[in-house]
Amino acid sequence: MMALKQLYKTSIAALLWLMAGAATIHAQQVTTGLEVAATELSLQECREMALQNNIESNIAKEQINAAAYQVAAYRANYLPNISATGLYLYNDATLSKNIEGGQLPTFMPSDGAGGVAPNGGFAFMPDIPLELELSGTYNASVKVEQAIYTGGKVTAAYKMAQKGHEIAQANEKLSEVQVIVLCDEAYWNCVKVKALIKSAVQYKETLQELQRMVQEAVDAGMKHRKDILSVQVKMNEAELNLARAQNGYQLAVMNLNHIIGLPLSQSTKVADSFEVDTAIDLMPESPGATNNIDITLRPEYKLLTKQVEMKEQEVNLVRSDFLPNVGVMGAYGYTNGLKLNGEKLINSSSFSALLSVNIPIFNWAEGRNKVKGAKLQSTIAQMQLHDSQQRMTLEATKSINELNEAQLEVILTAKSVEQALENMEMSKDRYENGMETLADYMEAQAMWQNAMSMHIGAKAALNLAKTKYLKATGKL
Image (cartoon, rainbow, N blue to C red):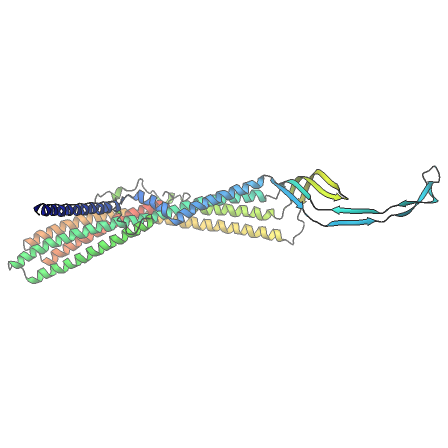
């Protein structure tokens, strides 16, 4: 009995040990899963992921491939077309015809000059039956066609296809730039909100320290209860602001995940922070004077330029419809079939050549009007390019001004943080020595927290202003 009890206890202990081990392993798996899920990404990594997962960017890449196939297809128009044709006829009908015979008069030479004269005699000619069989007739031929002159149609179409390919490339670059700007906005917003959370926590800790001091003073009878209530009101505001910042960070991360193609619930971390004050030195070079702006590097400019060039080729394409066309064709074929009274009539091959010339003579000014319309479309495209060029120059100038303002804002808000911190420390000393009211001290704390928030926002704005400057100047 004792042995059974001991065995029972041993079994229970082993079972509990296995359950504990399984729970530990499960906890480790959960912890490991969270660590894997919390991916830390840099700005460049986010950009690359956004470009890979953006639908518009992927569509633009496929449009480049489609345009390349169009170029290859129109290039083939310079080469001859070769085709083969085969025909076979099956028809069980037989075409019959009977040529009637009869008595045919006979003639004799009348003189030595080749004349003849009837001699009164007759010759009998029997009927001639004819049967034509169509079944089993077939033909095989090879044909070569080559356009010699098409009024420039082939060249214009080929050049338009090339411009279409270049437009697709510029459109892909434009799509990439737009995705990068969108990604940068989401990324720096995450960095900004993360820094705001840290600032809110610091402000809350400062208020907690103040609350402890005031509570001790109230307990000692040195302060009135209204002071602790005032601090608690500020604490409530700090709690609310911290909760808002945390919720904002959650939404910012979800937005970033959406842009870079990760699940919305993914716990993504951004690698950058504003703890080290290096935001002022983010620009690799000075933006330069606004009168030296070159917007020809922008994909929008390239896109519009290629559209103008395509419109110019479209004029040539329209004109070619009303110019002479010259082409040649050569064919070689073999035909077998057609039996007449059981004997095959055709069993031979042949070669043929054809020269085709088409010269438009009169079309009631249709060609002239169409060409004028195409020229007007080309002029409109040039006007749109000029207008867009001015708009892009204005946008680039604005981006430089905003970048300079953002740099200045970072410098000034950094000074404001230093001054607000010094003011808060002085206010704390004066409050502890009874030389300043609690309201003034809490106001100094709020000023410091507000200065921190403005400085964080300025740093985020500077990083985004840099991206927009690079976009506006075609350097992104």
